[in-house]
Length: 323
Ligand SMILES: C[S@@+](CC[C@H](N)C(=O)[O-])C[C@H]1O[C@@H](n2cnc3c(N)ncnc32)[C@H](O)[C@@H]1O
Image 1 (cartoon, rainbow, N blue to C red):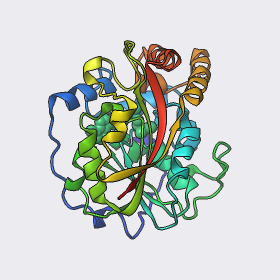
Image 2: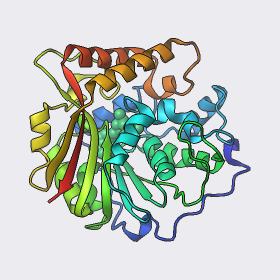
Image 3: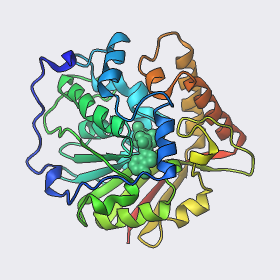
């Protein structure tokens, strides 16, 4: 692939992910995960489409040999509020250089790369169910080596930046991939709605986190009784959506975690979505976004905004601490 011919491979940190992988067992392909994968592939893209996708991006005018990390954010930050939301999530984790952090449902790796740039000396490991996203995340890491000065993040150096690692896996099965106590902290951004068993996920996170490890989440929960309109950015149909009301969501984290912070971010989310919709209406403003979210991406964003405004859904930020 000509995109990378002039790039030297990124150097891995000495204590890379291999040191705490236990096994790499095959994924179980149950009905719900197949349906979720159908959603993220937009029904037309295969489970593995890296080279195809990169060629399409190139034809959209995106050149990974020169791009900065922030140039990918329209589509590699797959949640409401982009960089701002990710920064908010990171700020709750009390991270220090040398810490290892798990990104649960890492998507295309935008938040993981942002963390690598914003939080010095931190090792980030992302896990995602969709193999194409995992492959693309690793490929997109190349943009980290283009960083000199990034206007959006204000960061200017690659010193102490550890490129994130990405693993294809189901976050409800974390104990199959990682040893107990592998991580100092974890975060999860716009993923809970895709997870059939949040109880299982919290139990598994409790296993792989260290004592008093924190989990910072930014997610969508059900608001009132009204019907949710589909498609949404994270689910095309009701059958692949596992959105719960906030009490049920919080309950699922017991008994491994206690809730230490809970904020309603819905007003912020509505504002961010209004801006995203305005930007999307400008022609050719988002190369890559249509490729990732499909031709109907505007409808998905509009339905989400409507759901927040009418109260059928809420955008929440929670922080949990391992007990
Ligand atoms: C809306 S995207 C958010 C991606 C990323 N957190 C971000 O904010 O850019 C949801 C992601 O969760 C992943 N996902 C869904 N179910 C999962 C599971 N059981 N295990 C791991 N990842 C999962 C999807 O493949 C998708 O990449």
